[in-house]
Length: 110
Length: 113
Image (cartoon, rainbow over all chains, first blue to last red):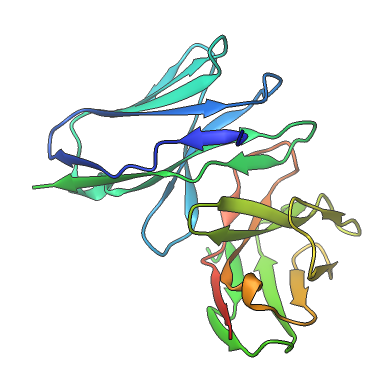
């Protein structure tokens, strides 16, 4: 089983839609969770951290479910500029290094 | 505001050739990392340097060597390139290993033929 698993998508949604991605992780001891964004042929960039109580940053909401070992990202009022690959990231087993998921691709159309 | 700078951006090598990928950061970060990204595999850690003077293996170190030249610079060397090393290589840095706000360089696209 992969340490971090994501649906690769693509998720094709119209502008203004709400879309949600889930990600599961295998290491129950993981303490740190993040969403990174990667544009086509560009480097990953930190989008937001994921806190136990859930957190929001503008149109983006992240949730953590420790019991089921998944994190989620909700994007409201999608913009064309949200089109990208969203990487789920957790700290790895017995290590403080980050483990990256393979990403979920989002395509927002007019 | 350079952040993390990687060179070269593109490279084509023949099997068996060697090369060094350069990475430099100007954010006074202690920790630096080398990742490779392949389709369907996600980013995988090759080597990292928690602080100046230390280096450690990551998930996929075979076929690579690294040098932490000073606090700013962390290079990745392929001694004898193989087609399996065709990939996109990203260097990243962070203030320390348990600070996960990684800043990535723009990547090096390497093709080994």
